[in-house]
Image (cartoon, rainbow, N blue to C red):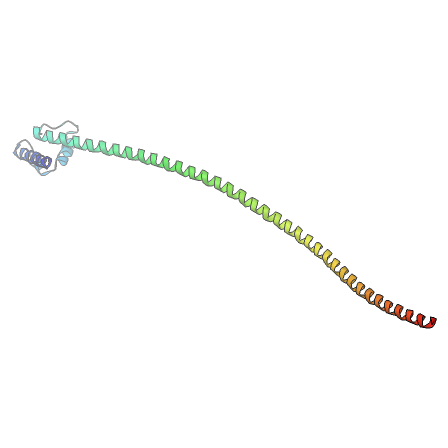
Length: 183
């Protein structure tokens, strides 16, 4: 608050001194200080201050130039720091992305290796399954042959049992006939 009051006092003192000074041209009082300085520089052709300035206006311009220079310097430093911060952030981001890329590449290699293993297993399973199918088919055929042979043997055995029974019956009948003939 006090700085605002002191600045208002400085500006009012500067305005009073500008209006009180008789050496300032009437056109200079209606112009802003920047216009005055630009017109003064362009008319004199040099950067030397004109002799029309009073000490209070000199102080005003000096303070103003100091503030502008300080602001410009602060902006340059801020811009320089901003660029530096942005560069450092970009570097950090790039490093993070590079590390993530490396991790992703490693994961990709692992996944590809696992995929190859699974593919080989499926291929070997397919080969094994086709081999197993062929083996199972052969075993089935062998078993079917054995079953057919056993069925044939069972049939033959039943035929032989029936034949044996018939022969036993005939033998018993023959024994009875011989025993009757021998009596």
